[in-house]
Length: 363
Ligand code: PLP
Image 1 (cartoon, rainbow, N blue to C red):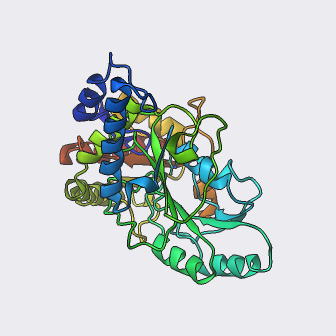
Image 2: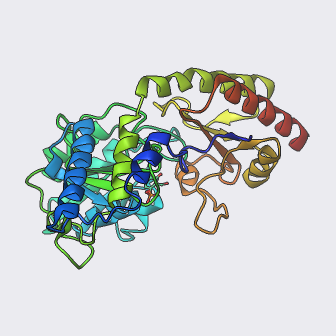
Image 3: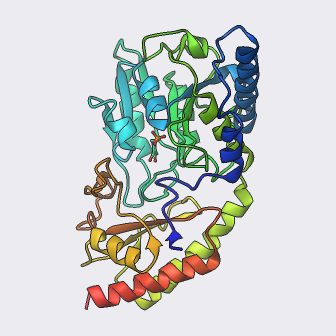
């Protein structure tokens, strides 16, 4: 069985999530129906909403279920006409707001706060509905953004702040009640829930119009019958979150990185001086094409990735690595990302395979 080290692309489905979804398999479940089936579905939906809300430390009515992180980001951004975001966001943000003002980042992959403040000052003069959107953690590098500092700065300038927390959920503690954020996006399949389900958190008092036109589901903020099976799978996966266990990955990841860099000093770790997600390692392999490295590691039994895979399955040069200004690195970075099924032996195994391929490839 190959070793799966691509959790940031998607995580394996938790057994608990699969069982929860299977329990609904033959049951009609439209939570808007008034008959007993509908009332049962409504109760399940309410329970699931409560599970996610309590994990985030928010009220259930602040949760809007969506078809995933992409839709959550699009729904949020479609409500604003002046958007300030970073150059290293996921395409689910960048493509949703092509006219946005982009903030750059430093060589460690952290956004430049002073540049954000300049944008916030400029935006005071505009008579537009503005929002700042800053991801909590980057999917390619695992670098954690100072999103609370960002949100506090936004509050100072009376501009609401959104965070794409798709990669952060399940890997670090989240308490949105105490946060200065107003909105956050989540996705089920990154935490062992099913694909095609996610949520947007919208703080009480913030108004959002539905992006989709149709029924009045989700308090009029997301039209369309709720994907109840997916939602209860999402919330079963929430119950499986074990942050401490995930944090243990950092030690194995660091060990693997140290092994690789001592055997091949030309290889470097992207974002190594920044706070990073415990499960993620982005390695710059000078002289080796990332796509070739991914194929060679696949043959050795390790499933890893190169930058962000687009829908065609091809690898495109990473805008994240390019924005970090590391000369020549785009196209030579591979990402290893572990999760709850990843063992210490998997990390040392992949380190050995990277060393072997680099010594062969760069020779
Ligand atoms: N945001 C980030 C940071 C992601 O990594 C992803 C998925 O890769 C998304 C958004 C999109 O989420 P989904 O696949 O649920 O649409």
